[in-house]
Amino acid sequence: MSFADVWAWFSDPANWQGTDGVPNRVLQHLVYTGITLLLALVVAVPLGAFVGHTGRMRWLVTGANAARAVPSLGLLFAVSMFVGPLIQSDLAFVIPSIAVLVLLAIPPLLSGTYAGIDSVEPAARDAARGMGMTGWQVLSKVEAPCALPLFLSGLRSAALQVIATATIAASVSLGGLGRYLIDGLASQDYIQMVCGSILVALLALAADGVLALLEKWVVSPGISGRAPRVARSRATSDPTSDPTHDSTGANRPGPEPREAALRGPDRTGPVEATAATGTPSERDRT
Amino acid sequence: MTWALDHLDQIATRAVQHAWLAGLPLVIGLVVALPLGWFAVRRPRLRAVVLTTTGLLYTIPSLALFILLPPLLGTKILDPVNVIVAMSVYTVALLTRTVADGLSSVDPSTRQAAIAMGYGSFARFRAVDLPLAVPVIAAGLRVAAVSNVSIVSVASLIGISQLGYFLTDGYARSFPTEVWVGIVACLLLALVFDVVIQLVSRALTPWTRAVPA
Image (cartoon, rainbow over all chains, first blue to last red):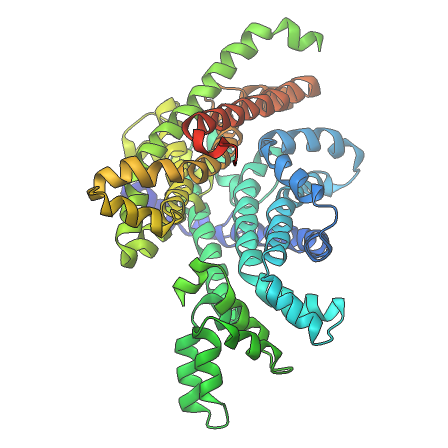
């Protein structure tokens, strides 16, 4: 096997058409991953937010994390053996696999959501309550934005887990890029296996990159430690903003940030307050 | 249950193989991750580069890595070395960040006291920073151990002998008992690793058990 063989496989038009073509396999893989993540989000985010906000039922997160020790291959085989025969349709292979993928995606999402909300600076939470916010407002306006970084890192590891396991799920007849690996193995077509592996690795890297960009994009600058730079650009571009508020709110530790938090329904107020009153390591970063 | 008892010797053989394939990479990975993590802490500018690069390695799905390594290493696909290398790569990916976090979590006043006492940078790393980082590193090792035990079982798809064999074989023969035996054996092995790492961590950090006066 050489690089030329791999190149020949990728440049063969036959490998780019039809059900077994690269575009279709990539699309299948993405669709499985998307459906799985959506279902897992629907379950994990409300649960994680509930546990993090109320502090009740923490065993749920501990339990979900302990369940990660179950080998994904075993879970896949066990579920397809028991659930597969119960379904009388073409979906008999898809549903068990998706169910397992959802089960595997829930723990990282759940603990990401929970840890994010649980790690919110108590001062910011108290300030929000002191301002008269209801529990729901505290959750949606203060805790949720502050929890975003940890939630998104949970989402990233969930996405990677799902992409990797969807590959393995080809051994229980799921489509997607794993087909190249498993079919190549069955027919001793090593080139196909290597090319499939390259595609899977690229897909995983691309997905991780997209989510990393998303993280940069959606996380408030006050939390991610990019506040001073943003504050400067805002001060120069927007004459109506108050430059002293922006620069002090994020940089100076002490009573100042809390004042910023109390300043009113300014969206960035409580958020910047957390960045400045946060843990020593967080303060070092800004 | 009877099946498990009847095949106890086979289970034991494969459990030992599994323990090697998951455990040896933990040691290799730790040995590689320690200098990398130390480097990341000493060169804050390169920290992000080191941590991102090692983090990217963890992104590559396991089955793909098992298949991609033989042409890169010049090994045969059935060579267990591929699995050892792949698992070491994952361990390094997980542990470098943990080691860096652990070393930077050392109290700055402790570090300054060590410098004032005349510790050089390596002696301080060995005698002060590293021991104090043990709890954090051990937590990372526990995550890596559980993840390794689970991922190694995937290697049975390409025919490498370990506990994952019971999963693939049980599925191929539609014999649920064997699959359950495989799952339970993997869980028990992960538990053993977890307990061992915690015990070693406790033994290495006697000061954490000091009773406050």
